[in-house]
Length: 160
Image (cartoon, rainbow, N blue to C red; front, side, top):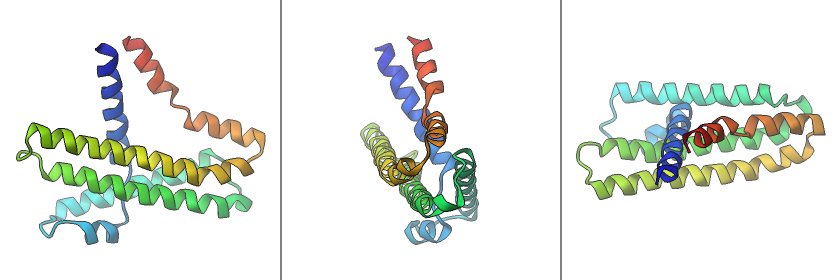
């Protein structure tokens, strides 16, 4: 039972971190938002968008993307933006129901977030595969280190 709780908590933390650091382009958010969106929600969207763009830029730098790899990087960045938008939408939907959702509604909305996150990771892996295949071995080692989540694995192991 403890292992289950730790795994669930880790998933929540990863999903929350992804949702907080990701964002949709403002026009996408505005087009899909409820008419009652407030200025503070707009500021939150802008902050998420800025954080997502920072994450994309940081990943570009960490992976040492060269000018000759830009054509392979562009679909990766576009996928990250699209994924962010999709995850943000389900997170926003869940947040909008806080206070009115039943326990079942809450569990189902959490499942939607987890599913959106899982789908996003699959899409990112597909978009990243051609870039990774074109990388020299030294750069692949860097990418392997960047994408390995050993910090999360260590925390799970320590909690056992």
